[in-house]
Image (cartoon, rainbow, N blue to C red; front, side, top):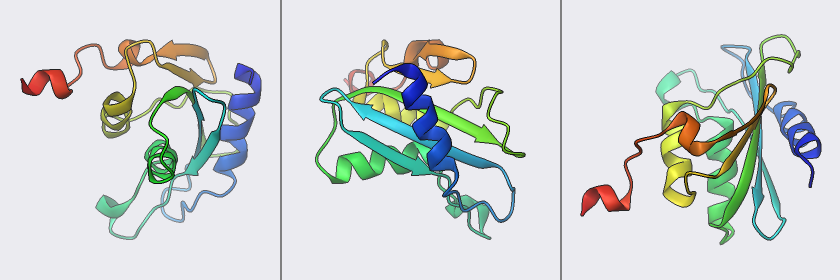
Length: 130
């Protein structure tokens, strides 16, 4: 799957966003190393702390289906359906991704390809607990 196709899948996932409060839609498309795609969207709640981001929705869907070996994720977010500006993952989503992905894990945004290490160079992981 090309980067363009993966990003298009993230934009499509954003269409399902439940963002009645912020009106900022986010979609994520997570690609496993064996080519399976898991899409997620942000789901808001009146009690904001119960809101979940698109990235974590996609990861949790994949893990609940038995997939933990990931190749890339694309993230598209917008408050006005213009997905041409990058929408960076939040710290919580980066930490969840770091549970399953190495430093070279690919994160695709509207401005191009990045790595997990670009966003989270000194991540807390299993090695940190030893």
